[in-house]
Length: 273
Ligand SMILES: NC(=O)c1ccc[n+]([C@@H]2O[C@H](COP(=O)([O-])OP(=O)(O)OC[C@H]3O[C@@H](n4cnc5c(N)ncnc54)[C@H](OP(=O)(O)O)[C@@H]3O)[C@@H](O)[C@H]2O)c1
Image (cartoon, rainbow, N blue to C red; front, side, top):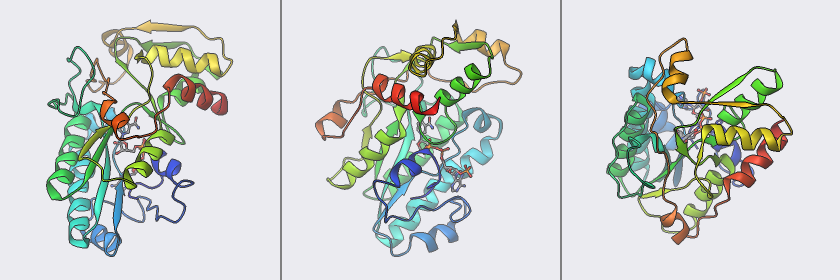
């Protein structure tokens, strides 16, 4: 596992306890020689390492490209040399969010942000290098920095909550991405598959309200537009897709285990509160 200390890496540990979980210190994917050394003799690489702070990627696009783009090219090249296949994880932010419904794996990506562009470059690197698989997911929460944890902390600290309500998607438990990876390792997987929480679409404000209620925090959430939220921020924000909904039809057809995001996010919020 590259990026083995991130949210998805931590969720994978109990499921695949004998795998090697490389932290950034152990394997910096921007270093081709280190990637070659670490991946030599390996059968499967799960590539999770990424610069995931979307606004930082916008401020530091060159670094984002080095990690998300070139880093994935390094991993793909090392895996190819080792005869290993790669399962990598990508994002809904490769889409521009203008589609009227859910994005399928056949839809054309058109990223709006440096994060989306560099993650798309990473996808292409994996898909061009060999018989590799890319899982696209969205709005991940687990053991790490994520939206639900931020909201719960802000609420517990008594800070007022203003949350965007015109970006729609489905949050995804890192546990669900981990289970999907394990399932895909047990079958002959397709090149590309979307895996997110199941259930109805929600806005970020909706996810906040669901999580606060589950945690027993009765705190009002002010619904704001993306434009209004951006106006209130000190620094410029990356542009995000208004529609982040990924179709789960392919995942369902493959038997990937999915969970309703309302159940999973509520359980997570109860545990995190
Ligand atoms: N989080 C989301 O909402 C989300 C949504 C859609 C897709 N994804 C994708 O899902 C995958 C896993 O996400 P996650 O939520 O587990 O992310 P995460 O918690 O941010 O973990 C990413 C890991 O990659 C490491 N990393 C950063 N730069 C690296 C480098 N140069 N070399 C090696 N490791 C490096 C980070 O280490 P440091 O902490 O030391 O920087 C971190 O441990 C990523 O590919 C991400 O793009 C995430």
